[in-house]
Amino acid sequence: MTDTATQFLPPSAYFDADWYEREQLELFSCTWRYAGTTDDLKSPSAYRAVQVGRHPLVVVRGKDGELRAFHNVCRHRGTAVLSGSGVVEKQIVCPYHNWTYGLDGCLLAVTQRNEVDPNLDRSKLGLHQASVAVWRGLVFVHPDPAPEPLTDWLADLPDRMAPYDPQQLAEFGEPQRYHIKANWKVFMENALDNYHLGYVHKETLVGYDHKRQEQAACGDRHWFFYEPPLKPGQLTPMEAEAGLKPIATEPRWYGSAFGLIFPNLFVLSSAVWWSSIEVIPTGPETTTFEMRTRFQPGQNGKLAVAGLKAAVGDLTRRVLRKERTYDLIEEDVFCCEAVQVGIRSPRFSVGPIAYRYERGIQAFQRNVLDYVPLETGR
Ligand code: FES
Ligand SMILES: [Fe+2]
Image (cartoon, rainbow, N blue to C red; front, top):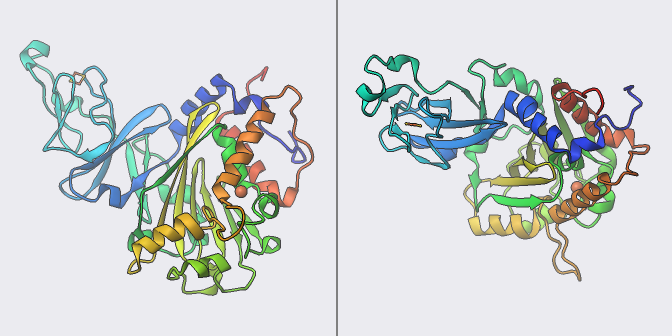
């Protein structure tokens, strides 16, 4: 492959079951994975089970306030000791044969121990350690007990993002979940495709200066994108219409920015909101993504939710009072599902691309290939 190639991944990467499995094992099992917010794990004994590639993990807040992550695999027969999310009652009790673990993962008790092994060494049978780290209230987990530190992994991406502290912002409303019929990389590449903004979103992304967009690689893996508003340092018309309080204190944080934390998390900001979008592969040709948004606290929560759903957000904005209702996410979902149809065609191949506006896609594909290299014959 040369740098003049327009497409680095083969079509099969977008629908083949073997490729999907390799991604689960070789990519998602080997990178930091978003696991919710610190608010989701606020109280002592709170936990969240999360699937990281092929590793079921669980993150638990101890009674000492520390977050810890373990492999969610009982040391007896492998049962997931916790499921979903909630609060652990006293200790972690495996639901199968009731082996008991502490919130620090140590094995505390084995039922009918004499039956199992009177000499069993409990100290060798704690839950396997995984890793957890927090960036701006976002919790990340990693199956490896000693991975590259999260701060190193994120490289200079944090410096490029608006300096908001999501923990100081208020989340109004429930996370919004979408299920689409497309491979997860089609969704990622659509988000990294800045060529379509003025066409697909001509009614929804008004107020942004597409011609002055900026993008940059952050370290080896991540990506940053920013578009200023048409009127520098001012809210876009729809942000102003929604009446939400600005978070930004400096003109340069107005507009719309996102950071891609490889492989599958976007953090986004405007002058009035901070969002995360987690992109979860659910099969070779299906994807779920979940969006959560925070606003400046101390304002009407109903207004914030209405603003998110009905007007502002740039991601969910509906332009009302017109003959049509426009929805930016629906516009993107439509494109992703249409691309997935075309990728399946034996006649599919990528043609010339808009290098400046689509180079984020190439960087993303190269990163996927670093983890899931092409095999002979593919
Ligand atoms: S599998 Fe957990 S106690 Fe048996
Ligand atoms: Fe889009």
